[in-house]
Image (cartoon, rainbow over all chains, first blue to last red; front, side):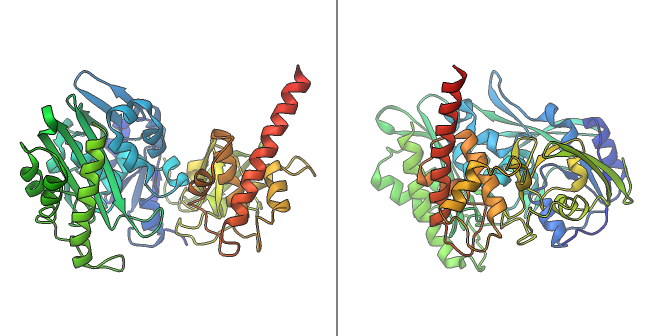
Length: 287
Length: 170
């Protein structure tokens, strides 16, 4: 199964890559290629030109502790995110998500930035990131800009990254003390996309009173979304079985899930409640 | 930079240098099989699901149907043909043989690569860890039981070999 013909470019620098994206009609960035090449082979995508950014890998594959945030380079492979000790201690939610992507071969080659820019609503990392409210740093012909996570995912397979821009870094603000995070995924088989994915990042005060919480849902809308009603329900309340179950009942209020071969709309709406409850409990256990 | 016409790819495969001309849309697996005539690497699905085309690329396992041949320019690859040394099978291959880790053998090249990647990182994997390591490799005959058994046996063999090597080098 061959992709449709395309012109192939292998720029040596990020600026050269941006210039090519700007100049070439219907061009697309090729990072790890674990989603794009599959789509191209199935002829669901047929870009006229590919700009392969693997040459700038050294520039964009890193995990660095900065003053206010953890900086993750866009070309960091999922496998690095999964096994990085700093990520594991600060943001176990990202280890949960990275370790559940596809399989080992895909995690070796697929990149964090690629998964976010591909923006499959059922993908694991976008949902997990949304719970951490990071900034997405992109570079383009007009310079660099930073996109808040609430604006980044626009629609299915569509983000706020413009055609001549490249995602370079994801900046994840550190969580305050007494925080916990988790991502859990409901799928029929290992390696499948999520039927429902839930990410949670929460901070508690004395007596487990919820000071802050973000709950994100994947595979239940055209983009990953926040379950704001459930978040509101829990804020300021003591986190226990009763409050967690009650809030999970409201977790599907913002969702608009599709019906497909993996699960009906009604099934997904129910599963959001079940998996939100579990994810909040898991995040709380990690405080 | 190159247009949609032919591009030269030079890479090292199993320690030997190869080069060939490819269209940019040529998948690495087709280059390996059709240009280099290394047909040990199999094509099972073409959609990145089955893992039969798994090879090593710069020290990591990848599905060679999910990589363009042009992207392998300058890379070091290892295919299943690179496992044995002459007539001497790799301990993993021996273990698959001895434990009936294959029936039709179609998935085996990929299974061997994924298992090797696991054992390099984790010389004493649990059953769960083995199953997780091969989740990107589908087998439609044996049902994985004997494959898992083979990987366990290979781990034992490889650990014993490295112990003997250490002893003899002392």
